[in-house]
Image 1 (cartoon, rainbow, N blue to C red):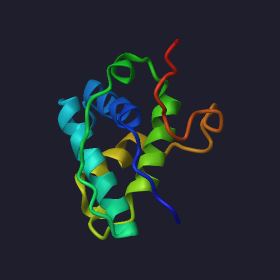
Image 2 (cartoon, rainbow, N blue to C red):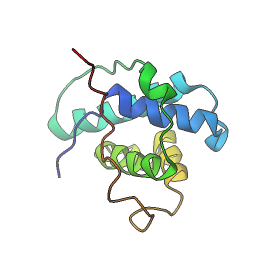
Image 3 (cartoon, helix red, strand yellow):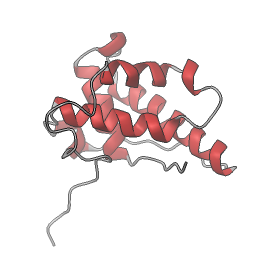
Image 4 (cartoon, rainbow, N blue to C red):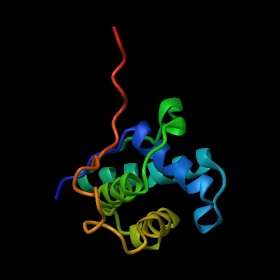
Length: 126
């Protein structure tokens, strides 16, 4: 299995979604994003024996973009997959939060296959 560090847009979208919906009582999007990103970095560091330092920043466009529920479920599935490599993952708050976002939904949701696996930054006009 391979793993990668999800970009700030991806993590921001999930963090803001969790905060807006107060999933598991979380309300601070920045703190959520930092937590999710740190676990993702820990996973990649463990998998590839690297020493990358977490460096998360909220991404404005992703914070205000109206992502659909199915997009958030697929994005949470992606981040879960990218973050599960290290031994502490299953007991982490980040794992529990992503599981709550996914909440038994997934591949069977209408639009799931069409949703982006990784939310990427929008292209800017030149």
